[in-house]
Amino acid sequence: MKIKSILSLLIVIILSLVLRLIILDKIPTGISDDELDYIVNAKSIFITGKDISGIWNPLSLTTPPLEYPKAELPYIIISPLIGLMNFSLFAARFPFALFNTALVAVLYFIAKRIFGKQQAVIIGFLSAINPWMIFFARTAFEAPVAILFYMTAFLIVIYSKGWRILFAFPILLIAFYTYIGTKIIFIPFVICISLFSWLFINNKKYTKQYISLFLLSIGLFFFYFVNQTLHNNSRLSEVFTPFNSQVAEEVISQRKLSLNNPFMGIASNKITVFLRQSTEKYLNTFSPQLLFLYGDGRSTFSIRQHGLFYFVDLFFLIMGIYGLYRKNKRLWVMLISLVLIAPLPSVLSNVGTTYPTRSALLFPLLIMLTGYGIWYTLYSKKFFSFKLFVVLIYILSLSNFLYIYVFRNPIYNSEGFGFSGRILTKYISLAENNKHKVVLLSDTSGVVPSLFKQYLFYTNNYNKSSAQEISELIQENDYSFRNLTITPCPQNFSQKSIYISVPDSKCKKIENNLEYTTIPLLSDGGTIYKIFNDLVCTKYKLKRYPENLVLSDFDIDNLSEEGFCTRYITKLD
Image 1 (cartoon, rainbow, N blue to C red):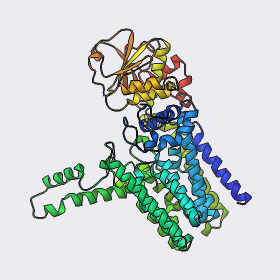
Image 2: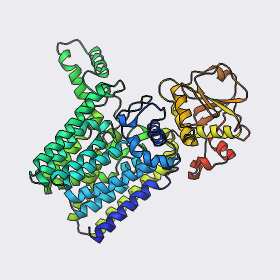
Image 3: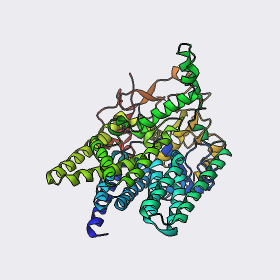
Image 4: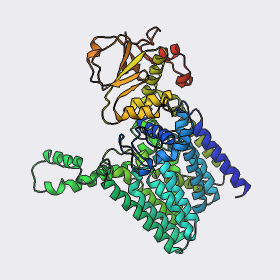
């Protein structure tokens, strides 16, 4: 690489790291349940070699038995970094910020190989500032990590010759077991990148090697399918087919709301309903509202006031698709083929679409096409003023996204990452400092309570000395640890203990006996948790709802007791 290319890549990497690491200890303001599962179990693997329950072996290529089934390998991948650091929001997301920055570099080198040096630099910068990339780099979700390995395998395939092509298989294996959603497109992805490299990169050479890569991939997929049929916690039942109950219900509904006619069985049946719903989900993946306006409807996967791309990206995406078709039809066919298969995980899921994660392969591909469109447009416009205008537009677009993400999203979207759970844990810690016991009124059946894992995470109470005790508590379904007890509803109530009810608590008898303070929703002050017999914060003058918060207020750990109570604990007089 020449000095200029190295310098450009270095600037891209530095920009990427800055946007992904700055104030990562404050934004996002909390951690979601899925993220927490990975982080806590990664720490447990580092300490004990097993999950937090002490039951699951991470080398079994299954998911922990006391959790909702997830991908198999993320726990192991992040364990070395998570294990070396104390729990914190920064430590939890730091590995993922690094992985995402690595994805930026991988896209740069892919673009350099298939497009050219100029296009690679543009795509590198675009990857560094893309809203989807920035948002998920600052989370602990596994889908973008899987995409890193998929794209790395793509990179190896297009750069390698001879038997080195098979170096892509270990990377593909890791990608396969890093995210459940993209397993559906595993074989089509391997076919697309192998055919492209065989036909147009290596000019039909190394046929044996490409066939070997394909057969290994088929074998991996078949092994997984057989293995899943042998496990009760398999998610194969979540694949959307014409035989799902929701399809049958829609058929019944359509027929009930139709006049009797001889064509009813032809027009309203499982196949027609399945095709319509599948088409709807597929087309919604490319919705301008999703991509350029509001993002995903689920607050954990989007800031909801900004798309996954910038407005200006739409123009350059169109130019990229058009320009690539004119200049390199073979490459156009390959990239468009990958774009067309990317939404399939969202289409073939019957438990929600969640486009930003299930269709995660789509977004790096669109970034590359958009970057190519910028190059193609600037290539035809030699004027320096036009190039400066494009740069200015992107600076303004990035600034607008960051303003929404940093200053607005933490308030109107506070529960996207369970901020109230962070407040609850801080309150429990303050109660412990004051030697008060806390009883959390919550269901403990089934999976490990999320609030218990949040408590362990935010208080850093999971370590070598406590790991064995905690695993025994989980196996016995007895969540009494230090000053915290989690139970659906105690038989007796003590005036020396604090009782906190969760929103779905079925323990109603306490509400008739004690006054309470609240942990509210930041956006409107609505009650999330009720604190009965509050022995920590009632000594201070509490507000009716949170107001006038600033960024430093999200440094929860460093707030004084009074500062915490007056900001985040409210009382409805």
